[in-house]
Structure formats: C-alpha cells, structure tokens
Length: 474
Image (cartoon, rainbow, N blue to C red; front, side, top):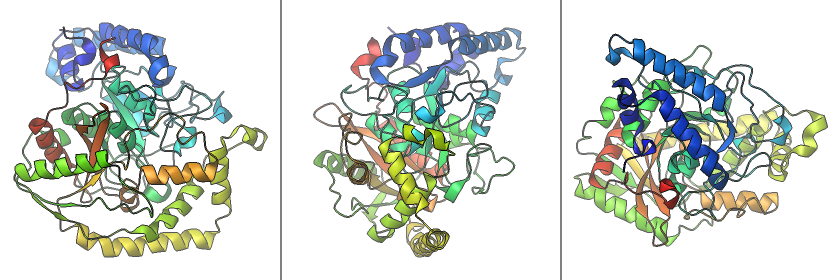
C-alpha cells in the first residue's frame, strides 16, 4: 500500500496539480504522523498546525481555480519545514536556546520567502542545537533529534530535526543550513541526500549575517531530484548578500535528469583533524563508492593533501567568534548551554588582529589548494568518521571534551565550508547494524550541477528510495 509520505516531493506536487491529492488531505496526513511520531524522533520544536491547514486550504483553492495546472507554483501544497535557526514571521523561534523561549519571528528569512512563493506550506520549525553550533541536536528546548534507523542514536546536527523529519516520513523534504557540515552530517546519519550549495548560491539574509561565508541554506531530501528542485527554488541572489555564486548553467533539476559524462574524480580518506580515525564501516562505504564510480566509467585517482591539519585551529577561531554573534541578554546568559558558553568565551578572547590573521591564513591556503582541486570534477570522502553515535555521546561531556569528540566525528565536512565549494552526501551504504553511512562528494565552485548529475547517476545505479527505517510504516 502506498501512503502519501511514500511519495517524493516531485511526485507529491504532480499529484496535487493533477487533483489526485488534496493539499488539505496531505497536510492532515503529515499532521497525524507528526502528532504520533514526533516525540520519538525529536524532529519538530514547533508545529504550526492551524497555519499549516490554512495554507493548505489556500493551495487547494489555487488548484481548483487554475486554468492551466502547469502554471501553478512548483511546490504548491508540498510541506517544507523550516529549521529553527531561520526566522518565520509570526512563528516562535528559539535558535535552539532557552534564551529565546519567548521570541516570535518578526520577519521572513529570504529562503522562507522563496519557498512560500514556490507554493510550499509550513508544517512547523525543526529542532536545532543552541545557535546551531554543535554537530548533534540536543538542547534545553526540545527532545533530542534521533535517527529513525536507531532511536537510541543521534540524528546529527545542526539540521538534525530537519533530517529526522524527512527520514521518519514527517515531511517530504526540508530546508536546512550548513556552516561546518550541518546539512551533510544529519543527512548521512539519517540515510538521506543532503546538499551544501556553493557560497553565495542561497541567501542567508535578512536576519542572519553572511559571517565569514561559512554557512549556507540548502536542501535535505530522500531523492536527488527533490533536492535539485528545492535548490532551484532557493537559489536566488537577494539585495545585500555579501557573496554571489557563479551563475548556474541552467536549472539544477535539469542537471539531475541528465548523465554526467565521464568525470575525473579524486578521493581521500585522510582526515584533516589530527588523531581522527575513520571507522571501518565508513572506510567500507568509501571504498564501495570508489568501485561504483569506476564501474560507471569515471576516472578515480588519489587526492594530494590540499587542506591539512594546520587549518583546524584557524577554523576553531572562526567558530568561536561565530558563537558570539547571536545577541544574548546578560540577564539570561545563565541559560546558555555549557558548550555555547565555552565557545563564546573563546570567541570573545579572540582579538581583531587574530581574527584577520586567521582569515589571511585561510585565504593563502585556499589560493594554493584551488589549482589542485580544480583539476577534478568531484572529490570523494567519507561524510563522517563514524556511524551515528548514541544520544549523549557529545552532550554529556565537559565542553572541551565535547568539542574534541565532535572534531573526531566529523573531520571531513568543514573544509568545504572554508573553501565555499558545494558538497553532497549520498546514502549508498548501510552497515551490518542497519545504520546508514554516507559518502561525500565535493565539487568546483559553482559546480552543483555536476554533483547533482553524478549523484543522480549513483542513485540510479544503486537506488536507496525503498530503504526505510522501521518507524516509516507506523
């Protein structure tokens, strides 16, 4: 039996346009699943039930009155939750923090505006850790986000709620954001396809500053084509954006629907973080992907080291300063999580010359690295160094140990936030315990189209859409 949540976002949108499914029926279906299952997976911090139904009724009226269904918005009636680091006017927003337990959104982020213009409807806000700083999603304001493949394990972060929602069938797709791996980490832990776009491809404004250019919004989805459609909707430059990605070569969905040709692909499983060890399951996923890429006709070669361990302290400097940017009322500072307080202390202790020196060091490293990386159409890595870890693995530790464990868990993602290159995680492998193990592919600046075409080829060669966690059929 096919349920509404079995449908991809593209198929769901087509069924709504064809009047085979009612947007109100779709909304009710997802609200029922959220009510029954959200407590188990920790996907939503806020459910906007009445607004969701009202937006669905409006979408249904648009379908009924449309003279030509082909002219309807591409996501009309499709539920797309928003991460609780992004503001939605009139909807509570916590930034994953007890500090903001009483804040209501007073504007729409640009990405929210674009998703609404595309016809999507809002089921709610997805959980995130405090200020989106950690690579796991546990906070004082919502239940821990858990991977639906094993509810004792973390969904990752900081878009953990978004990934848990899609993987558990509580949303067809989701918006996430990624400043150090925060789309790719939870997508890998939840068996999904996640895409971090090129710096400047998707607007961060108007509320969140383009600080250092590390973070960007992007899609989390069950299929490559769904992610491509979501990126097409999100990828529009907006006034005031500090960064501008190279012009896209046609629609991203079109790229996902055509073969990539023969590509030159580099690979590396050497983590940049000193002392980080790659788990055998993650090595197996990486090696299997290498073989599959060669079977598909691509040239796979070893990548020389380009961004090494000397850059890790530089990234840590930027991350500490980033932690200071969210304004905190001194009277509420005692409500901060220990890790956040520790990171903010490090950030406040960083002088302006140190910060500019860190930027100069990174720029010099990237000037040396890009001529090497640009020789390749894509670069393959493990997404993570370990399978999904138990809830509390990080959060139960003192801040310094917590942060060290995070670095060892995710040593591959952050370099591509530093460089601004696009990167995807592809769910090609599950280990003997039934846990998803993603592999990461990074591309040239502006090269999302190539990554989407390649990922779609991998999806066709080794489909994952029928792999579903036990909670899926509940």
